[in-house]
Image (spheres, rainbow, N blue to C red):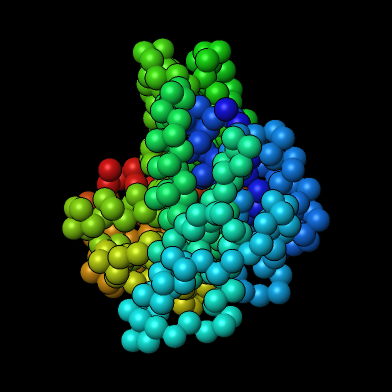
Amino acid sequence: MRVSFLAIGEEIISGFREEKNIRNSSAYLYSLGFSTYIQLVGDKKEDIKFALKQAENFSDIIICSGGLGSTEDDITRFAVSEYFNVSLEENKEALEYMKEKLKARTGKDNVPDILKIQCLIPAGSKPIFNKSGSAPGFKIEKNQKIFYFLPGVPQEFSEMFQNFVLREIKEKFPHIKSLEEKVFKIFGLTETQIQKYLKDIGIPESVKISYLPSFPEVTIRIIGEKNERFFQFCDKVKEELKNFIYSENDQDNISKVVGKILEKKGFSISTAESLTGGELANLITDTPGSSKYFKGGEIVYSNEAKIRLGVRREVIEKFGAVSYECAEEMAKAVREKYNSDFGLSTTGVAGPDPLEGKPPGLFYVGFSSKNETTAFEFKFNIGRKYTKILCSHLALKILLDKIK
């Protein structure tokens, strides 16, 4: 069976906003055995109607996101009413639900006119209640096809898709052959290198693999029929890439994984950054709850700042700020200053010009614990922005390898 996704909005087709709704929802249905197709559509009624016609001719289920708000460019409901040649009606159930939500939040159940617009849905359609926002969605069944229309706000779309659309599809189509999915989050290999590893293992014909690179890591999804051959292949991949796989949870990132272990084991960390200029601390604190294990950090960009932290002046004079020795002393000094279990440091040449006679892309990551102080050298001349991002992730990967 076929499912078409329509993402509606000028901000999407213009590239001003990333489309976030389709990726995960499409993956869910694909794993259930549906063939999925995607269209991006602008905020024009004729374009929306044309896209609906294409999708209806091609698919059994059509899922649309966007254009259900109260602003002038929210025209999906109007395009849909014209497409199905039905009037828009103020849905009593949707209006009552909105009143209840407003009363719970404000103590008043008076619905402003601008919000009442959101309760207009095509005659004969069924409202889909929005627990995370205000605009309801709606469902239409016609000509043995099912249409779902949901808001474009990612949090609202996700909740309504998971709790209504996906659940209903599973109930209506229990005969669809489910596929198994395995996810590996990989750091330290490029997409091309991963493909070579998997090719050497031997990919079964019944297995499909998708590669989702997001610098500096790659997520791979392995999808296939739920049988012994599928699981054997996944086990081989896990064994072959064990030094590079840091998680099997699609929602994880390296900061989350490190944070979970630090919190579970009661460890703490502090950072001293030169090259990364706060990027490492930012990466750590992007994870909710990081205050439980992140004690603090220092941006020691100048040599004098490094010395004030605790790096010996003679170390900088002899080896330079961009050196194995300086990275070691930075990591140790910040660990001692913050009385943390671990200290991480970064120092290097982001570029584009050399520094102290050392080339762009050369950098060091320092690691310190009560039992060990060491540093690691890397050379990646990939520009300032990506060098800082890569160095920060490498620092967490080094920490992960030490504590897991």
